[in-house]
Image (cartoon, rainbow, N blue to C red):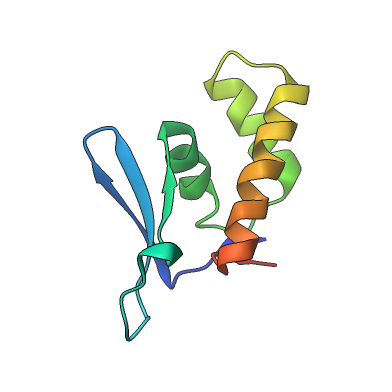
Length: 88
C-alpha cells in the first residue's frame, strides 16, 4: 500500500491536515485532520509499505505495544481508504 500522491499533508502548529490536491472544487469534508502520529505514518506511506512495516516503525518511534500500534494503524488506514488517500 502507499499514500495517494493526490493528497498533501499540511501542518499548522500542532494540527496536521491531509488535503486533496486535485479537486476542482474545495470540499472541507475531504480534508482529513490528523496528529503527529498520523504525520509520521503518512511519511512512511510515501513509499510502498505493509501494515507490518508501519507497526514496526511506530513501535520503534513511540513507546507503545505492537497490539496498540496495530489497532491505531488500522483505524488510520480505514480513514485514508474512505477518503481515497490510500492506494493499495
